[in-house]
Structure formats: C-alpha cells, structure tokens
Length: 134
Image 1 (cartoon, rainbow, N blue to C red):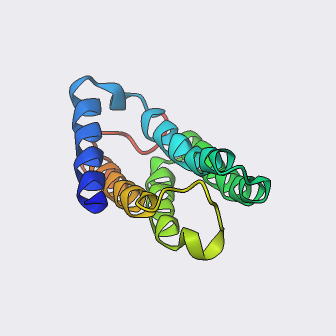
Image 2: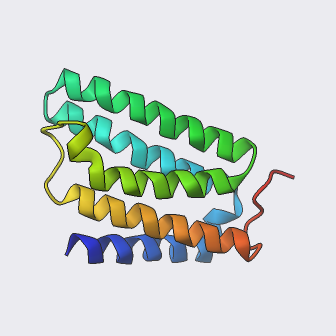
Image 3: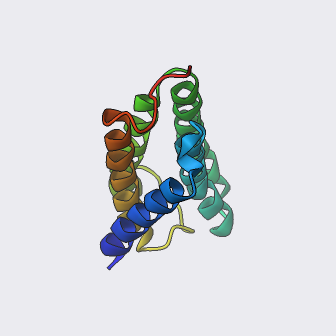
C-alpha cells in the first residue's frame, strides 16, 4: 500500500501544481526536494536521537545543496536528486538507524521521489519547464 500511495500522491501533486501553475516557477521542484530531504531530520527529532539527527543532517545538506545548485544551474540536477533520494530511501535503514522513521516511510517516500523525478524529467524533456534559468 505505501508504494501505491507514493505513486498516487506524486502524480496528484504534479497534476495539481500544473493546473494551478505552481510549477511555472523553477523553484517548485527544488523546494519539494528540500522539504523531502528535511523529513528524515524531523524523524530524528521525533525519535529523540541526536545521533540519528546528526547523521541525517549530512544527507540533508547534500540534498539541499543539490537542490540549490539545480535551481541556479539546471533542473536536471534536481530531477537526479529526487531520483537519488528515492534510491536512498530504499537503503536508508542500512545506512542510518533512526528510531523516528515509520516502518512504511521508506517505501512510500522512495516511490514518491522516483515518480516525482520521472514527472520532472518528462516536464523538462517536453520543454514544459525550462531546465536552465533565463
């Protein structure tokens, strides 16, 4: 079920953003990526684990940096970061022990991230969103 919800929500958010024109602004998908990256830090706080929060912060900073660079240079970097975060989700428990992460989260978030990356890639490939700043 978490996989299905991840797919449905990623597609629903993309359609909603398209309909109300939120994705006209190049900042939309980088902002989505930053929020996604920050959630593992939230789970570290919820789980009461300073060690998990510190470990998560390293990855958070990497994904935030990729989002900022992608926003400033080329949104394909953001699409790659979303995809990479999706892969990271599936291996997260092997890399970081974070007691605040719900059991279903890696499945949901990994699927959401990969689908969002594919959607952004399609938008970029079809020139519905410009990859580079004007």
